[in-house]
Amino acid sequence: MASAEENEIIKTLYQHQFGFFMSKIMFTACELGVFDLLLESKELLSSAVIAERLGTSHIGMQRLLEACVVLKLLRMERKDNEGLFGNTDLANLCLAKSSPRTQYNFMKFLSDIVYPGSQYLIDAISTEERLQRFSSAMGDAWSLHGQELLSAFDLSCFQVVCDVGGGNGALAKEYISLYPKATVTIFDLPKVVEGAKKKSVSSEECRISFHGGDFFKDPFPEADLYILARTLHDWDDDTCEQLLTKIYKACKPGGGVMVLETVINEDRTGPLVGHIRSIMMMLLCDGKERTQSEFNALLNAAGFKEIQSKKRNNYGAIWGRK
Image (tube, rainbow, N blue to C red; front, side, top):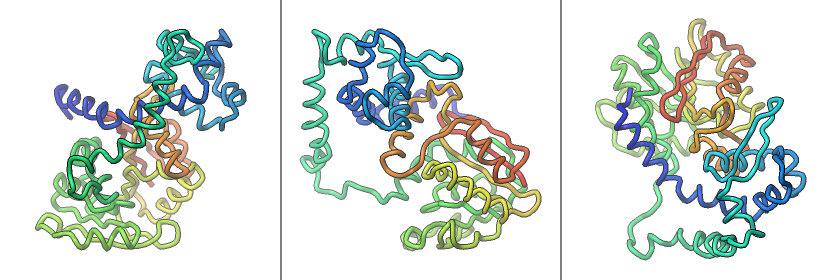
């Protein structure tokens, strides 16, 4: 369990890490006219109504509005299990275009000119390589949260593990550090596996092997435990259910699956990083971040039982057994 001081440090990290995305969320809602619509309506509106009036997709608008609530740009009240949205004083004063004190034009300048240009900032101060491989970037989180999440449940009885979508093996190293007798197979796309194999192998990593293949076409390596870490958020519900069902069939009786993902609050009021990542998933793929009940439904549909969950910082560890 991380200390209160460590949790505060990590919270500060997230605020800076996603600061650019927080700004873009505000820019987008402003430019779409969300704050003007709510100011003029003089009443709370549902995400469906807002999407219809502004000509956007409902799913995209709902995610944008929820993120704005967490950023304190909007407020939300629930009625008949539906979220109704309204402006905060900040939105009425500075974000609505019709306000006498609007900051719309300045924000549009930041969004259209400064924001796109900021990607070249590093070119002005350094000529070194500025981008890590995707798998390395994804692996960084596990140096902060890996052991904490993996120790949420006692997994010591699972000595043969398959990390589905495990990239360069960052989480596998954390597992082996906790359970020194275990072996972990990384099952990922062939090109990811080839890149990971080129890196040096320490004595600790000798218990890590790599297996290239397609999650949906190729058979899974045999294992007692399958791990899906920040993998399900890449896909829609139907595809996630398909993947989980395939893992369920590969599981031995008594085996199971461990899902590590950002978990959205049931009332969808946070955490902020979850809503930001959900919007990122909408931009990058067909996925989304989910609530605990949504994860439970996916695991149940695939056949898993004894579903348990524990939350650590912004991540959740969700466990299901065959």
